Each structure stands twice: as structure tokens, then as C-alpha cells.
Image (cartoon, one colour):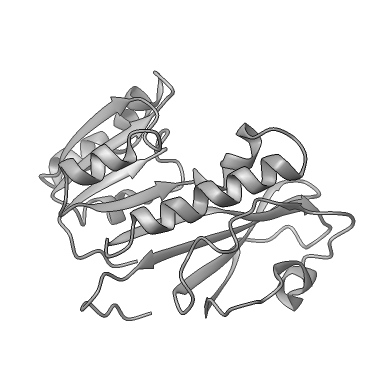
Length: 210
């Protein structure tokens, strides 16, 4: 993922466990948010010394970044946005049943509209569930988002030997059609895997090599 902007709004960052420090040093300035009061100190412990050595200015803010998103986008019109393992968690904060699913899908649809014309990216859960795939380093593939594809029927998923129903994190339509994505098979714990997606969405007039 190759950003153009020198400034990034890092949302749901936690300690940045899933982000390589080397990637973060691509930026000149980082503003990170998380609701957890311990997230900032842990982020500093994990990434702080190397960011400072690279000359990256960074600040950590406690709060609900999604609730503040319209104001943040207005305050930082030239900043890129990155959702760090955040969007796939939204369904856990919705009520159970079809109405809750519809609320999450609507919230993500609004989010896509808010980000129109913006440089942004995300890493998030697509599906998760029990499987008996080999305990090996993360398997990854590159592809482009196609319309109408069923993730649960994807042969790539079935290579993990799923052994029961998988949870749909409702993020299959987060990235625009045509976006180059990395699919990542992550052995979360023995017998349980997550299918992650990571991608960087190109702003208008700027082409990024897949």
C-alpha cells in the first residue's frame, strides 16, 4: 500500500499491532485515535522510537473516531485515512438480528460516501470461523474486487478446510469495485481462522501500482 499524502488519520489504531513500523515511516505526520486510554502509550512503546528516529510527527487521541469522522475529514482535507482493524468490528456493536445487520451495512455505505475522492485504506476482517487449515505462515493473495462475488463460496477460503459456519463481518462491499486488495489468511488461534482484507484506495487522478 503506497500512500501519496504525507499525513494520515489512523483510526481504531490500538497499539498498531497489525501495522509495520516501516510502513508508518512513509508519513511525515500521524494522528491516531482509539477509544482505549491505554492504546496511546502502547502505540508509543511499539512504534514511537522508530517514528521519532525517522522524523515522523505523531499524536495520539482518545475518542470515537468514527463518530468524529465528518469533522476530522473537514479539519484535515489533505490527509489520508486508514482504518486499522476497525470496520470488521462494527457488527459486534450492533443489535442482534437482521435489523442490526442492516444498520451496519448502512453505516458502511455512509462511510464510503464520506470518503469519496479521498485517499484511504483499511485492514479488516471479512469472514472468520473454525477451520483445520495447516498451521503455517500467513497465506496471502492479490486480486481486484469484482461485483457480486460470494466470499463464502471462494475456493481460496475452502483451502483452509472450514469446519462449520463462518461469521460474516459485513465488509464485503467496503472497497470500491476494481480496488486491488490483499487477502490474508490469519490463524487467529488453533482451529480458528480470520480472512482479512487490506487495500489502499486511489484518489482521483492518481494511479497506484497493485
